Image 1: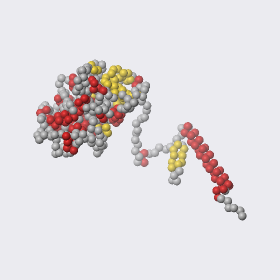
Image 2: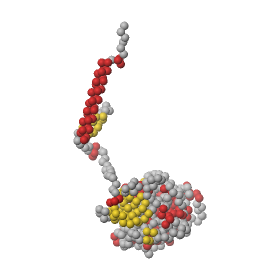
Image 3: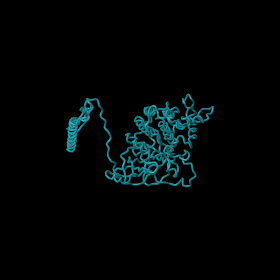
Image 4: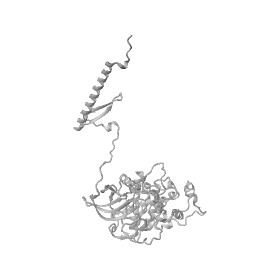
Length: 458
């Protein structure tokens, strides 16, 4: 009896299947070779998907899609190109050195334009590329405003750790300029400076960026009366509702009370408090609130503005550091804004009071402040081009440093107290002159501290 042959031993059918597969394989190989040849000749190819899920290669010119009719949006992406060499710039002189960078004055070889070259300190073994510089580059690339310092490009040297930020050169920083002035700015000049600062801040906040270190030493001023906000090393994007962020930000004298009391959720209001401190400093030609430590700073704020309570600042007692503060029965301030600033109008006092509100929710916004009546009464803001010019000290002259503390640095991996940042030490070299580059620290040994690098030119 003949045995039944298994189906998988059908040699004829197997031969037919193998032959078909061989032809399909050769066909695909031939099509691939033709496609590669067409690509080398400059023809375009594209791939579509058939209803059965198989991919099909189409050859020839790809027709452009009408994005308008299809309802799709067209976005223009940034141009991607390699960084130029620092050899395109001639180094003129050293200006200043900070914890994260060294700034030089330079000249563009091709155009002759004077620029500021900031060489980043890159510690490959420990911290790598400084996060403050990344934040500064990101923020300046996003922001374009006449009152914000302009980032031109990033250039590189011959090694990986030779990275330079090229920015516009600005002749002065406001802090050093005020230190050299015998009298404060005129009321009309104060209005112009403050209005420009508010305009730049409103632009930052509209682009979801908070500066977190606004102070007079971070405000540059050219000889045309134009203010330029600089040093975005502590700048961050914010969100609504506010996300938790570090309280180790903002230089002590300009730090908002909610941050001093340990709040980890804050937003644009911290910039507005700093602007209020700057406004007061412009009026009296010295810092408005000069604390030696965090607790001393908050007590000086209470002496000026009075003590808050749950009615004036809801949630005040729930802040981490508020529980340790003993509030006296007499909550009235020892002084008042009106007695502290007797020579400004009621509208000026109202604007200052609106900027220095305890409750962040009651603090005026930059956009609202731009429309305040203070800017619409006499004397009117002076045109920037009418400002007097001052000699620039950004060359190799020597001058006394402007007394202003640095921003906190613990956020960048260091542990430094505010009293040390303020420069209260007995170093015998404290009064040594340095190169003409106004710094925000009191003493020379503090130059190696601080959050990022402040672009300041005296």
